[in-house]
Length: 485
Image 1 (spheres, one colour):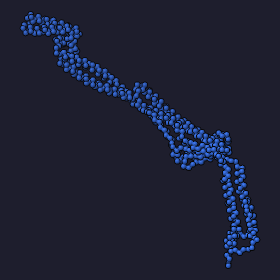
Image 2 (cartoon, helix red, strand yellow):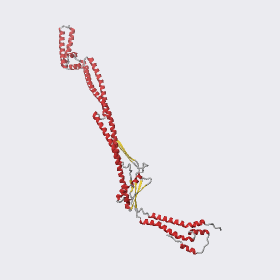
Image 3 (cartoon, helix red, strand yellow):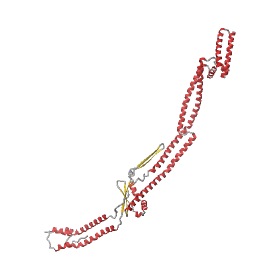
Image 4 (cartoon, one colour):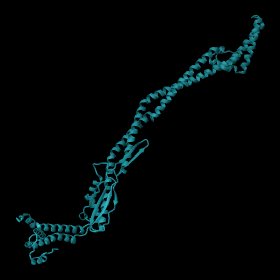
């Protein structure tokens, strides 16, 4: 609104000139915009003021009256800052571990910036637009804002109604999470595919080593290095037993030799003597021989060689001796020469020595037989140990290679399985902190902001015109010559 000051100036013209000091007169001229005769500039300034106001307010009022109402729905996503780790230990096989570091651990790559670009990707917006049944152009571009010093991402979407804005925000978040699932699945698939070749090589290595082990086991009969060590240990034990038996054999030989020298009989004749004197008939003959021998000895002291009594006693003794020899030959089965070597007299106190000789000879024979058997077995075992020495070393190497290959294969399989659970390695976990809001007031047009801008522009226009109005009095005052009085 423009206010004219002409009605207020008319009464001043009708008044008589008033003498005023020069200082007060200059102040009035300054307030009135110069000399009173320069008021013809007022219509021009009024016209400029009206035109300027029209140019300022016409677009503002036109925009406010024609612009459709737009509503903005806001949502907030957040990225947790911690990582995750997992370790699997398989007993006697191997170990596999999986570790996902914090998404903010690497300063060179910001996950929030990555997700900001991903949210604005064209295929995500197209998928969200298809979900709400609109075109890519009508859906618009989301406004993505990163909140400093946090892992939060703010999303803003605009639509013609509150429900449509909220629906578009929900569709965009759903499309974003669906795309993340696709990217994570593709990454896991790529990792699994790239690891299949290595796992196949590990499997082939395990199978080849196992086949070589089985062939060596079938060829040598050696199942494991432990079996070879057991054979070596048994051979050492057998060697010690053979040495002990040799000592026992030597001891038995010495004992038999000593008893043989003492008795004057071999162990065979000593056994025959014991067997012979165990016969009751021969024992009776031996006693009879002893009596006849004693009688013959007495007769030999009393009579001469041709005396009938002595000859009769000698004949009886000879007959009894021959009968005893025949009985001994029948019982023992010895030859005549061997029977001659026998002591046919009662054994008396020599029975214990004869028994010791026979027992020592039996022990010597048993020890010798056992020693011969064990020596043969020892020779066979030593040959077997020597023959299996190289295959056992080779089998041990194969088993070690097999264990290493199996551990590597099992670890690779475990890593392949654990990486399937590590879905947040490249694309960190993101959560919805605030769901898309339902706006209750339009975000545009902003009437208060438009009116404030109009008033500010109008004020600046009036200030400019005021400065233009006062420029001449100021210039005249500055250029005025001082009064000589």
